Image 1 (cartoon, rainbow, N blue to C red):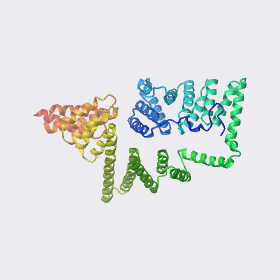
Image 2: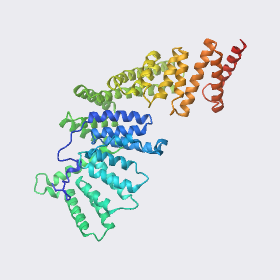
Image 3: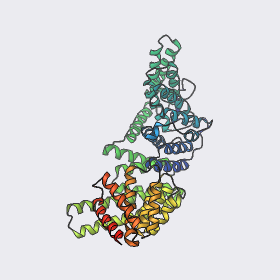
Length: 497
């Protein structure tokens, strides 16, 4: 193999260090799980912190880089993004290790969308550090995106180009290294040493591409042909949109890799992903069986969770099909019964899966919130109350939790508790306007019930006032017009007494 022109081997494409670090993909996935939950709750900066913390555990996971970038983009596009990023985000990756420096550069890169010069400099630093930490596929991703970022700098700096050229060479990306080197030469045509370096890089890239460095070795050009075939398979696997033939090929390749490395977690995860992408019934069963077998062997819960998601996906498909049939023949009682049965079966399945999530992630309160919602849908209101009461301390979902807790109290005819809980929900500062209106409507309903059951004039008057306010804002909202008339009559009746 050709030695790297600037001191490292070009075979370091995976970012291998002299002494490969020890990474923890399972610990990384725990952070990634929390990051996904935070992202769905639109807590984008917190999601950024969690993605970065996960990448500290295992920077080889491209899903972590993709997730972090999605969260960073959403943060910058949100009202929250108009403020400075809090100190907590930078603290999440503070440290002097190469991995910390890589993640700090990645963070600074992602935050520099309006300053292409700063983005280019951060991209170069990210390349220089990622090549030292054994980051696998992430290394290539960083190299390719850094190459693009540096070339977009409206005020190109020769130093950035030369540093990136050397980093790309050390990362095993000679073609990109030559291209950025040629750009550097155009910035300073008089630099003879640079011209010579680029010429040597070009020669090395040609030899590597053609397989010349293996002349006389077993394999030679045949090995290069095999490598080209392997690269084609990798390219197909990375495509977001795949043809059916591509899907068949990447699954066949993944199955072969699994046969060689039956206990390798990344290989198993790759096959699971491809099976679900193709999504044939047999693929889903294969994925479910493989995930369950891996869970039984490793006790890594995310594989049990994956298997549960397969069954949930199948159950949702049954509900969708039953709904389609009912929509086509809305008067058919049998079809209505089938739809109701399938819908209930889906919720019951989700309850069982969520119970496992709550058990395995006891500090992740959002799972308790989701389990409470399913209990509510099943009419198990006291069970729902228990879950919501535990979940209400999570600031990310507090407003929604209190709303559902108030509804659960209302279903149990605990009117005073319901009214108090709805009031607490309205005090949550980040409750969205539509959510505020929903809570106010349900508070109106609870106050109306108190007026009717306890003959409480004050409650009825407050309910009428709320109904009137909602009516002014949105006359078509639910049954607000009719409810307003009912409340007027109730208030008049109570006042007459």
